[in-house]
Image (cartoon, rainbow, N blue to C red; front, side, top):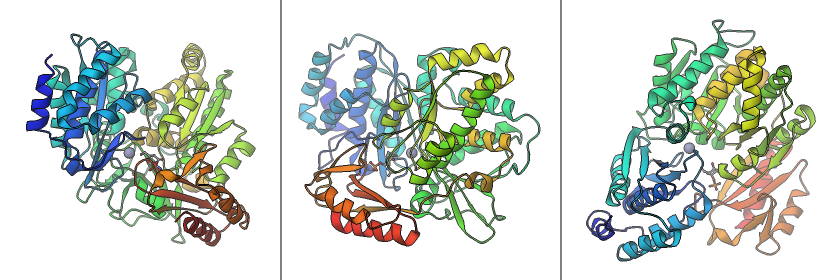
Length: 525
Ligand code: NG1
Ligand code: ZN
């Protein structure tokens, strides 16, 4: 391996263009696609080194800007067990993309030396992308990065983010997990889903009919692939299939933040279940419009509580002694937390924003259910839990069902389609429609605002982002405002993915939630 090639490649094909330093954040690097060629090239180099560092284990690279607008793109690395890149390498990544082209060779040499990487070892990298028009060019840059250090690279073309995670885990673990191919992914999820569902497709209030909003992203085309293989076990019509701009007035982020239906969907009968995913299909929310024309959102908090309730019931029927916990962030609606504590009586933890934090916390339970309010989440089962369920499944029907439930779930990362299949399974099993689901608790009215400030990092927080540490006096000011509102709660934090400060507020009435949010925003400004 000749490091000289690095500089030549960088200078000729992927010269550094990003004017300002960028940082590997909660979702990797993200920004205007115009500046990302060199970032992608260098992330290919880094993925190649990381695989060598880990004895040739497959490292994944996903090219997407998720729910961001169309001009943006991004990249993140996937570690061998499907987790997000380990923290210490995030710093290396940040350093590597910010050095000049000239310094590249020396920087890579430094990384190799510091970490004692044997560059004679094999290196294997998997790469996939979303359907943005600039993704193919960026994918080529990643591949060139891997190739310039003589690593092996396998391209998966257009995939959802969770599919990419699935491939990486499937390749690095046993065959029993599933095959690291598109067909392997569909087969695993569909087989488990259809086994639980059986042949009776409608039950009680549950109707086999959903409207799917694909956000003009990858989720739409993959959902169509699922349906082709499902023979009607799920009756689903797909919209926003890519005819419009990705995430533009549609998709999970739009629905959650705007609190209204996506455009591009047909007028449906009242109370029809609508499902929105985001551009790379790792987030999902449900919604419906009732007979009074009222929009109703079923967000990540609803999903977490529905799943936890179902799983607890199943575990009880299995007769297994397994503890279950729910992990939320500060954005979780206060009413959902009350419902978890008072009705479900399940332990609930609050952690800082970013699925990495949620995932780690969830792993402390035998069964950990985690969702961000925006619909990003999944469920993790400990090795001990899986073993107990597997044993008991030989004699207990509920345990056999639970075993299939585990196979419907993409445990490595939030997966919109897998989450949706699980939700459909639960609603079917309970004989529920959206109204039954909505009736479990009443959300507190809430609002999320973005505030532009000079330097968002002036604001630092503690207590899982619920308390401000700096600037001095901000928290005291906030407390004073909040005290005037019934059931008021508000917090501010710098975004990890955009150059803004986010303000969240909830209160007993819509009017109050809005007043509170604007009062706090004015304080931050
Ligand atoms: P930031 O920009 O740090 O608030 C957003 C979402 C996170 C997470 C990340 C990664 C909100 C309020 N924040 O983070 O939950 O999904 O993007 O995509 O939704
Ligand atoms: Zn996403």
